[in-house]
Length: 376
Ligand SMILES: Cc1cc2nc3c(=O)[nH]c(=O)nc-3n(C[C@H](O)[C@H](O)[C@H](O)COP(=O)(O)OP(=O)(O)OC[C@H]3O[C@@H](n4cnc5c(N)ncnc54)[C@H](O)[C@@H]3O)c2cc1C
Image 1 (cartoon, rainbow, N blue to C red):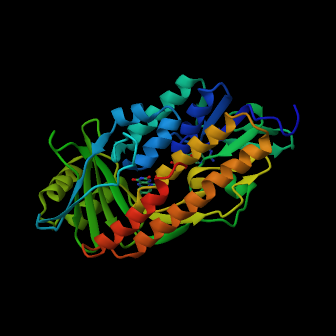
Image 2: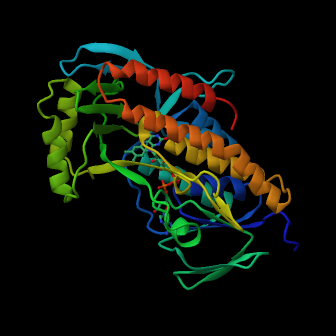
Image 3: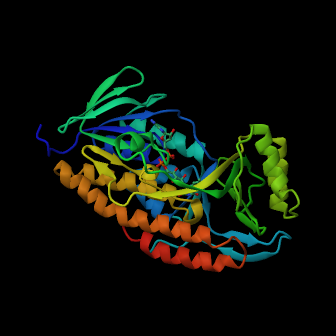
């Protein structure tokens, strides 16, 4: 095989949203794909996608399966703590398409959908395995795994998240996400009623949300403008409730009761950002998803950017062009969009959460969507 032959054997390190999405898109087109996923643990509770994220799932043949397992959001009521509805907000439409404007899906459900799609398409997915040693030999990469197996690949894709071991070991160990003293408490609670609709309650220092997310569940969260120490599962549940138990809004009352009486995992995740401006690829290695760019959830775009990376890399690899131009086209298509999404998410984070800032926030979102709405 010549050094510039199209890549056929692909190793994907990290079986999250980007990794399994990519695996599905490549395996479905006949490429040989192996995914190694270190833990199989699904962090977080729910995740929202705007229409441009659904377009990326569509490019990978996954859109219908994702929507079938999600809640389609038409609009959300933005309320004051006393229950007064201040405004009704909805995500922008993606012109000339029929994708829903927004969906919310439980993360464990999405993980199952993606894992069965990747395996169904023919990818080998090994859970509980990672890379032990890796040598880029120019024409291929030889890899030894922690389960004792070995392999030779034409391309290694690192999709191992914001705190990527692959980036640290094989790219630049000095790149670290900027973690701030703010973040989001998250939990999955049972659906309050079949008619339940998305609600956001702005309590000044906190913003609480409760969204149906399919499978008779709701995605509950509290966005906080401060950090939190690590806590045991029981302490985390108590902390979640204590933050908002004084709020009289019925949705918040429901959320507190369910979290207090339930045994579901409750997690605090600090917000973080990083963006690698040019070197997402090095030899036969490439970074995608949060490994290349992480962002707070303010633009609902981290997972959207991750699945777009997967869709665009799958598109480029399955065109069977010379190896070098495949990676270059991928970077040309991805870097400016991800840079813009990271920057806009940070801008929204920096406008303090309050009812007054909501319109400034939606202006940034509307503007960002004009950009993100264009084909990736
Ligand atoms: C509070 C919060 C809420 C969010 N909400 C949204 C939202 O509503 N919408 C949105 O678009 N985005 C949201 N995001 C961002 C979104 O979660 C991420 O952008 C997205 O999960 C990135 O996907 P990924 O596949 O790149 O990485 P990940 O989802 O982090 O997956 C990485 C995978 O790699 C595995 N892994 C790690 N290390 C190794 C290793 N050494 N070897 C093998 N495998 C490894 C991990 O176990 C994991 O499965 C949110 C983020 C936060 C913090």
